Length: 114
Image 1 (tube, rainbow, N blue to C red):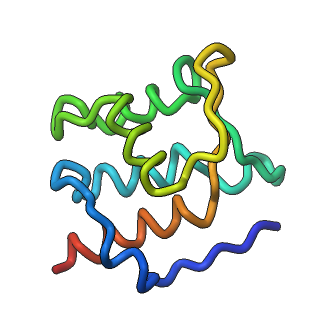
Image 2: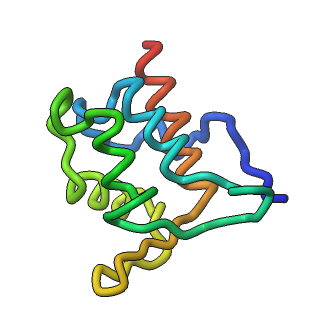
């Protein structure tokens, strides 16, 4: 079982996050697109495109239509915040860092509330 800290970290308060990411749709996207477990099995990888991919979740939450958030913008933000451990466009795969994804989600939620 993976445990992640869901409190707001001091270091994340200084993160620069574009306004287009500061919304509930994006936090819900992060929660759904980067799970800790699937069917009681720990996961840390996802596909960039295709079924169950980051792109499919972005489309589901209408990130591009509602907020102008593209797949490339998502990958850049995740990379800038050290949420990506490894990315392979050739293999259509991204390995992610659970704790940093959660720090990003919590920081965005805190900024929404302010």
